[in-house]
Length: 140
Image (cartoon, rainbow, N blue to C red; front, top):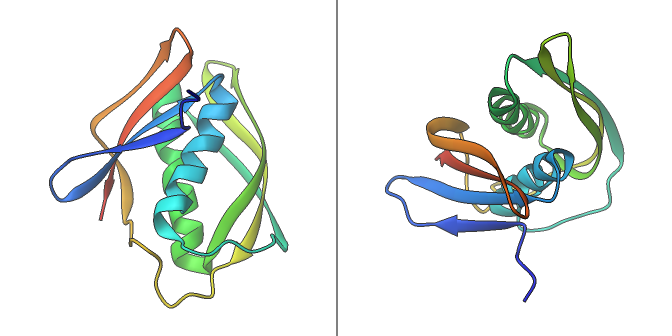
């Protein structure tokens, strides 16, 4: 049986998600896909390209910054990422996410769930036998 790239878990007042990836890049992409799966019902063809460059002192912090950047783009511009062309790497003692996302503008008045932020509460990002796993609580 193929393992899904994310799985929701029970939590009070938030949405809890385990996110999986064979590598770091796949984990970050799957994090974005899980976020938008929760927030948007309908998918459309991407029509806009958005350049992204983020950095942080740790991979864990970069992951949360990435998810919150996607939430910001959705809240501010209605953008929903549907394709990801990103790199995640270490450079001069910090971690960098660089690349672009292809997006469409959400035309629904409301998404499935209004997510305010990815939080550090009970968060982890770790290497596993199958690749990487992250546990994220989304504040709703």
